Length: 152
Image 1 (tube, rainbow, N blue to C red):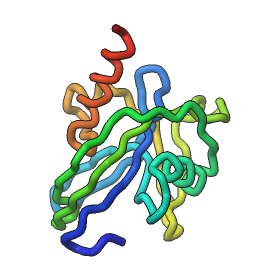
Image 2 (tube, helix red, strand yellow; image 1 turned 60 degrees about the horizontal axis):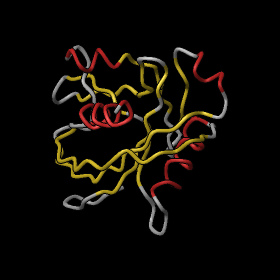
Image 3 (cartoon, helix red, strand yellow; image 1 turned 45 degrees about the vertical axis):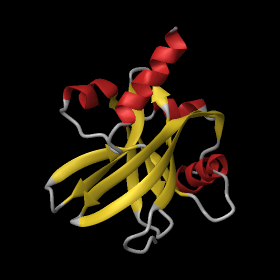
């Protein structure tokens, strides 16, 4: 857990499935807001961000990844559950080794504390249209810039 007033380094990973990305659904009761974020977590001392992604996906979903590619960095200053937060977010894209994960509508996951969550494939157009909220702020722009570079 990060102490109040400290910056938290995290790594997140975007998995694409057609026009959808894999995200978990969160809820902020203070804002009365449902939001979505790619999977990932805190980078441990002495751990490279690439290692963090592989570890987090293995711990949370029991899955292995391949084709891990660095996309960029986002500085995320935010309020969640009424508490201020500040993260340095290293963003990656990857593919699952097991293709069956792309066929599931939802994937059950588990946090370090034993709490369970559901990851789901959410259409990117829902984030673009504003019908769904994607965090961290700026992630969609970063992914769009990455897609433009790949097309050129």
